[in-house]
Image (cartoon, rainbow, N blue to C red; front, top):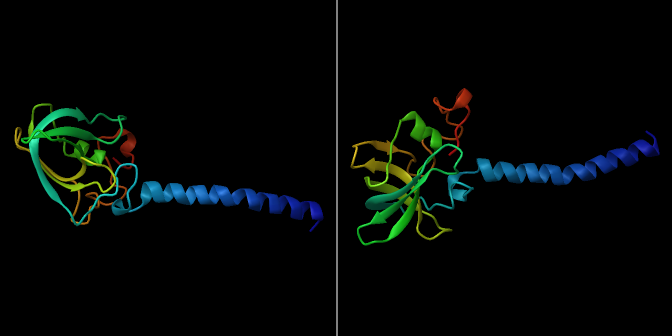
Length: 159
């Protein structure tokens, strides 16, 4: 092997280290377990499930608008944000939440953000719909890579 070949192979190896590190980091961020936290699961605490009741003040559940969520105003006036995903589970169940609906939510509090909760079960008392989104460990229903039957081309669902 010539010196030139050794030089080029060494240069390629040195350049590949940051690329592989970034790939591993991205995999952890998007594919890590929910209890480790990621963009849609802000460090939930599976040992601390709480019950929240109130009236829906606003809803953010359109495709392409980030993690599906809604603002819930409790009877004591405290406003909390409920992350209500994975998105594909809402779509597959044709689950509806509207402003003014009365909701009961079992949720895991975020250990990173105040007044943010990740829904485990949604009970819409206005329309009677019930949907389980996460198991007792905080893992999304259907596990990683669930499919959205109503999403374009059946792409794997995240949130």
